[in-house]
Length: 408
Image (cartoon, helix red, strand yellow):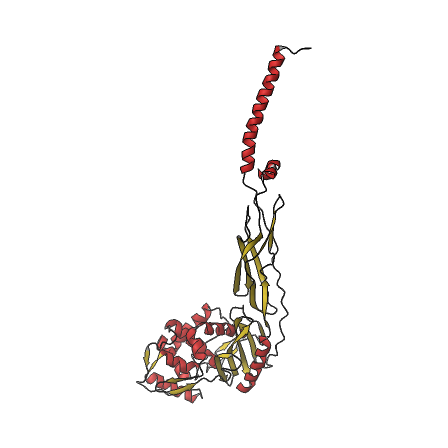
């Protein structure tokens, strides 16, 4: 049966408007799909696992208390003996020097201001002689630089010069003691008590933990570090002053301070530089309450030999190690690797924390940096950039046209 004119007209309208709709839809859909931004690819992270050997056994001395740490490493790495405060004798003078230098800073090689000694300084000398303390000559009217007073206090362990430099810096020894207590509080050394500038009073006490902190502070001060590492110096008006540390220069030991008192026995706060792989590590430690200095020196050398072996050169991450990976809906994938290998000197038995921070990406080329790998080793933070090994490319028009749900 032939179509009526109305039916023919209706069908033509459907074809025309349907075709127009298809053209309009294509004109809208094609550019929208082909030009739409690609979805971001989220990384799947694989944090590096660092496996370290166990800490070595250390033959600590059987007396008093002892322990060691290292610059850049948290707290005490190993210790033995009592954790209670013990008399520290002339190790006290390290605190004296640091507190004085905070009040009157010096640069390395700088003599600093001059002090003129008085009858008060002569009395310091007489009082120390009466207590069998170590002294160096002094006379009213004599002048001496701040640096040389510190040389005598730290190297010769002259009690009267520790009192003189503290009194010069703060007006009196009692004022110095107040300043020292404030300094200790700010350093977090709450287990330490200071009652005089010299350590001749057994009421000057500290713990192994605090003394490890003190050793780190001493090494961090360039002037103190230089003085305690010096074997001998010529002081005007006094003559040649020799360092009383019998271990200085042996096995890399470059400080820090001896101490001797009936109530404390023989003591030594020490530092040693060692090489671990391509890196230098400064180890610090203390022995308190030894029978004599020969005995503790032998014990320290043995202890350090074992402690040194506890530091290992570790590769924390290889340059080609995958720490994250991208995978796209259209089948591209790319690994994320460190831009260079990461190595560190690590104390065996310590904890190494790794954190991978990687960006979401759209398109990337080989070598594009996309994040950071950070290792936390105690007080040390080591960071390295992360780059793409591979690429994420545009999937092309066919994938775009056939996967609108991935685009919108």
